[in-house]
Length: 229
Image (cartoon, rainbow, N blue to C red; front, side, top):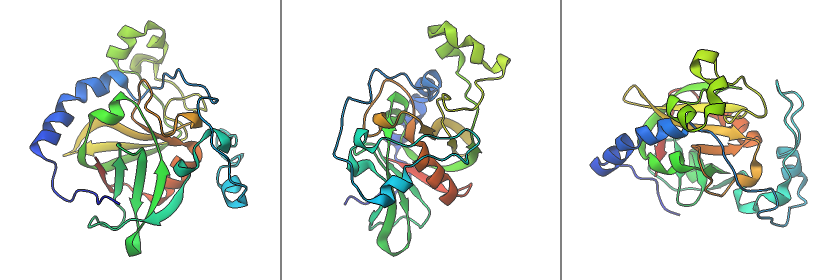
């Protein structure tokens, strides 16, 4: 398994990340899918652990329905894996080439989650930190997006943004990524569109199934390092 890079953000990565901020502002971590749950299937495991892991969460502020596991390839289901790396325990590593997010753990292990990516998910790379966390966040489309999609004006900053809920593009939880004290506009967040995991969709940052982002949110404290490769 490829180790996460331990060097500081390269000049090329810095230029790429900086130049893409305008693109990130345009995408705003929204979700615009042309996929359907029937787009890809894989044989579901009968393991009751996974059925419980991805089952309904009625205790949430907005009750979350169960994931239909036959719509998500099994390799993208949450699991602990071997992950030898020089990165410190607690580091979040997003491997955009393989659609995985790793949370580095002790003993050469990591918790691995499948992710879906959009343009913004590919545009930014480097080292940063999780400066802010939010449960059931609001979503505010940037002005550039509203210009392209006037119907989103009702969710503008002036109108208070889109309230939290199952249809909110940021899902049940969001991790906000800052670099050198500045917001990268890069988000790791939940999504009810579990069939988009493992796929590149039209827009958005890094999305996890709502059950997975809730699990990750509980494991990752504010200030944790994150690396996007």
